[in-house]
Amino acid sequence: MKFVIGTIALSALLMAGTGSDAKAWTRTGSVTTQRGTYTRTASGSCSGGTCSRSASVTGPNGHTVSRTGSISRTGPDRYAYSRTTTGPNGGSVTRSGWYRRW
Image (tube, one colour):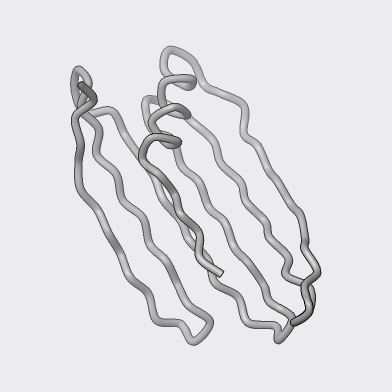
């Protein structure tokens, strides 16, 4: 199961959190398929122009895939982001960059 953290969603969190600290949030849920039950946990918060989010999914075999990410406003209509995905065997992939909102 893959998580997609869109920079658009994170930028929306960032815009909601600028000016004052936004409340932190947590979500949990599960889904049962023919292969078993998958449990998901996600949390996030915004503070000081930076929004962070972390999420994980644990499958019926007990393996967990997790992703953490953040986005920061670096200038007018300009944002920098970073995210790291860690697989069930401990390997991880980090992606980062910037984008400009037009």
